[in-house]
Image (cartoon, rainbow, N blue to C red; front, side):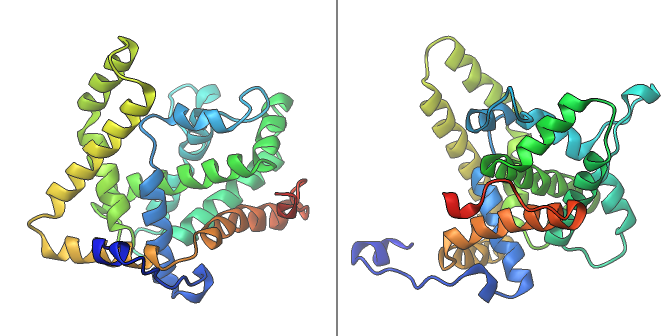
Length: 258
C-alpha cells in the first residue's frame, strides 16, 4: 500500500486468486514466494516436526535430485529434467510445479526401499506447513533452474531478482550469520538484516531499468489486491490435487479443522 493510501486508511479491494488471469496468478504466486525465500533452508524446520516429517533440506534434495557417479547415490533430477524437456515450449512455472509435484508424489507412492523415509514423506503431505514448504521449495527450485537456463523468470521477475540477490549475497549472509553465533546479533536481527540486504539488492537492480521496474511494480500491485487466504488455498490445492490424482485419497486432516 502506498504511503498516501496508508495515511488516510484507504483499503484496496481484495479479489480471490481465481478471479485473475492465469499469467497474473503466476505473477502473484511467484511474488508471494519471493517474499518468503529463507536465508537458509533450515529456517523452515521450525514449522515442522523433524522427527516425523521431511526437513526443508530433505525436501529440497528430493525435488532437485542429485547426479552422482555412484548409482546407489543418484537421485532423479525432477526440475532440471522437466525444464530441459520443455525448453522450446511456452513455459508456465505453475504448471511445472503441479507436474513435478505430481511426479514426485507418484514416485514416492511406489517407493519401497526405506519405509521410514516413505512415512516421513506421507506425514509431510499431511501437514499444512509441510505442504507450504514443499510448494515453496519447488517454485524456488524451478525459478533457480530457469535463471540458469533462460536467465529470467518470465512471470516472476520479483522472485527472479530475489533469487539472484540471494546468490550474489552469499558471503554477506555468511558474515551476518557468524555475527549471530558470536552473540552480536539476535536471530530476529539476522533475519531482518537478510531481508534488508535482499531488498536493497533488488532495488539497485531495478533502479536504472524501467522495464524490470514496471514488471515488478505490476506484480506488486497484483499481489496487493489479491486475497491472501486464497493464495494459501491455492498452494494447498495444488498438492492436494496431485495427491488425489495419484492415490485417490484426500489429506488425512481436513482444512476445515483449522
